[in-house]
Amino acid sequence: MTGLIETARRLDALGFMPSKSGNVSIRIEGGFRITPSGLPYAALTEADLVDLGLDGRVLAGARRPSSEWRLHAEVYAARPEAAAIVHTHSPRATALSCARRGLPPFHYMIALAGGDDIRCAAYATFGTAELALSAIPALEGRRACLLANHGVVALGTSLAAAETLAREVENLAGEYLDLLAARLEPVLLTPEEMVAVTAQFGGYGRLR
Image 1 (cartoon, helix red, strand yellow):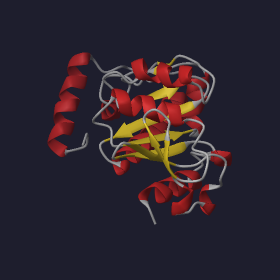
Image 2 (cartoon, helix red, strand yellow; image 1 turned 90 degrees about the vertical axis):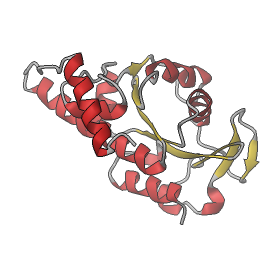
Image 3 (spheres, helix red, strand yellow; image 1 turned 30 degrees about the vertical axis):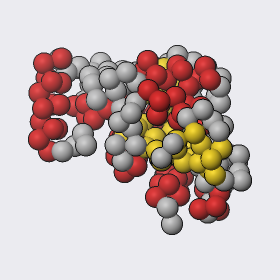
Image 4 (spheres, helix red, strand yellow; image 1 turned 180 degrees about the horizontal axis):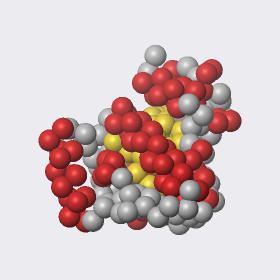
């Protein structure tokens, strides 16, 4: 069974991709392979996956690709180092995105996304080119962002890395929302402290 299907099923079981939402892809020669539109993840087979060029041309597969194929295409075009993309509707991060708020450096694990914050992209209708393009500036210098009133996008140099990051964004969003719910003001790490965290992560291989 392909890693795409296994990843989609794991995230579905966690409640990160409810009601057939979310999507997962990997870069392939000439484009990317993505989960299809409208199929329960438990029922997916290899034959259901769709290969697309970065221009949206179907290279292989009989199913309709995920409605968010444009998002994946734009990210792959803009980020040549990205080998995989995970897009979830995980509950805590999605809740935060509905307030159109990103995650500040309240916890050192923010650095896992590549910088000292995780931004929230500008709102655009799901499945549109506008949404795909809104994610690109939010991902500049980052490996993850929130999509306003929508969910999470995480990319990685492997499918495992993208999945791990999507899971961590959800964890961080939950912690941040808990702080806000308790009416506590988080003490943010300084830029210098975040630089030190990034250097420490590099030594442990956490950002690979």
